[in-house]
Image (cartoon, rainbow, N blue to C red; front, side, top):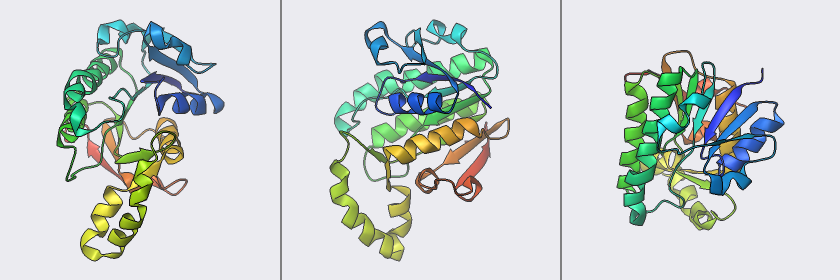
Length: 232
């Protein structure tokens, strides 16, 4: 069944590819964009001019039954961009939650981050705060928690693959290697499409960790967990 999907961050690294994939599968896609980025909205998607940090600028373009996919975030996050996480990443998910609640959207999809982890404490803190905002609003949601998404311009972690292989062989480090494993852009897009097309039960938050993102067409129930939307 075609769905009405509203994407924030739809002109970015993941957003462009997701919007195109959703259109190919027959979904109706609207992309929130600033005027300067409108040219990057995929053909077939409707551009909605607005500010991802200001719920009032786009809430009128949302409606009951919509799926809201929130992908706004600081490009190439690192410890050096902690201030940007607080300036952009957190206010934007808070705006999306506010708009989703006001419009009565059916499902919010949020890309968070794997945790715990030995680095990127500021990034994890902001993404965790985003999850908490979703829970407080008692929205029906899917939260995906990748660690790093490999793709064009994002290949440097492939040098770590031999180390990941060793860690997976050792009992003490196996769980961490799986939880903080790398996913490809293709796996990420497939998981997001699946999240849109197969929403969780109303009033719950579905958590999808790295093994679930990698699961492909396997039964997601084996790789996800459900929480009451006020208990995440």
